[in-house]
Length: 284
Ligand code: SF4
Image (cartoon, rainbow, N blue to C red; front, side):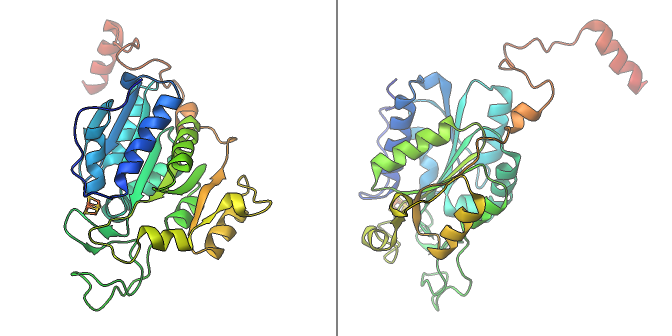
């Protein structure tokens, strides 16, 4: 049950992604699964390296495409615990189409976004999560567009599990990832994971000053989508905790008639000779 491997991460010292890696490893260990029951798929960016740092199946995919790969894995082997990971540039720019459609499809996988409001791997350009006015080499006069709102997008796309955390809060982050992995459907988890090298605005101190824990809001009901949306909007998206969870909705797999209860490599999917002949006849 040890999800650590011997690969030394090459993130900058202090990068928020270290905690996300540790939280995924701890959550998997807490769930008492073993490494061959977990697959971590990542996109491109500093965060994309994460799949190589965990002792599990891992695939460092292509930019913005971690989700289609992760969904394919889950469809082929329902016994696997599948986690897709990436950054805000990966998931909310080039991969945004996949993010929205994966959310509404509700396949039983977990998506962890390391949101640092900047492109770190390419040395600090404005990302879809950078605030208006954000100055980088790509926007020397300040970003003109407002930042994308991932929580509102997820909630309005029909998400059945929406959460947000902060990489310094390892206890909360681990618990959230654990709940997301247990959730029967798509779990969307946005994590504020500061880029200490290029983002000098959204720093650890900035988040500490601006984040509100949902557990501090008296009577907050995370089963009410409208209340979740209202609360997120009132706090400009700067909340942490499980924002919304719906356990009533069936996952995509449960809705697919005939979906194999067995991994495909164990399922009886070989065509019988007469079935093959029938298929051939259709093409004649
Ligand atoms: Fe982390 Fe930023 Fe360094 Fe990338 S550039 S490893 S996001 S601190």
